[in-house]
Length: 327
Image (cartoon, rainbow, N blue to C red; front, top):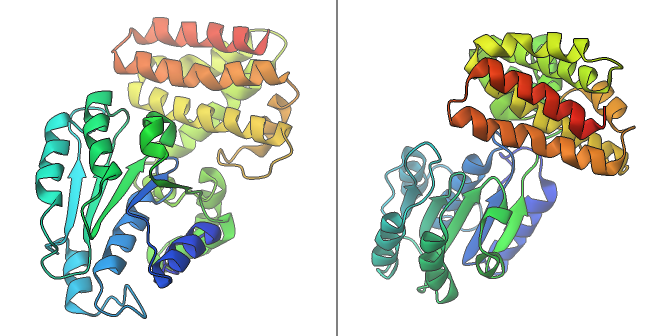
């Protein structure tokens, strides 16, 4: 199995390739990671490799199976996605998978099911999926794609191999963007720094000029959290009251930034938020305070989804951030 086209994540690729070469490829895999880190890309690449006719160079990209897999028309690859705002799998969707999974592959050695679990797949659907994973049909491989394996039942996690995907190094991400998206090298490096090497976010930033504004506001809010008075935080958060989309993006960036502060405090170096100075300053807070800060953006993203009044939401957000930081 050749996964060299997928950037970074060397240990994940080596583990998958070794299992494939040894003929012990897992029947159930969980790919978890932040949005934009390439979970869907890797899942599709694995599926293409599993149906490829050239087992020495899979996926070769040239055989009829690879061509059809790349086009989304291979009969032994099934993509299953949820619906609604959370894109979570339903019981009905899992029932369809079960009904289909016991057929023999039409052309390849495997029947591959890519299950995109969305934000929260209900226990009823997971329990049905569990029965399928516990006693998998011969030749069936299930690739479960989600942001966090913690959203899965422990019984599912225990029967699948979990892999966490992370963005590639910023230099590698910038080189890829410059080569594949016709972006000037300096601009590509700026985007890589802005997005922590997250290719999905980098490409979103190319399409959305608001990415830089969200980045600047998140940094300013982070500085306001540790400021002496309340004015800096209130001033930094004020633009969020008039732009729900911007508010969502800033909350997402704050979540990454607070996560980076925790990483730095524990001596780690794998940062995702693109604001190392602000994360380092936040790292001076007690560990308990940092953990409380990490929860605030997640709570307010949920409030945002419930169409809360923006002026009230932003005001409460500032209060919650200051309280979490012990200010």
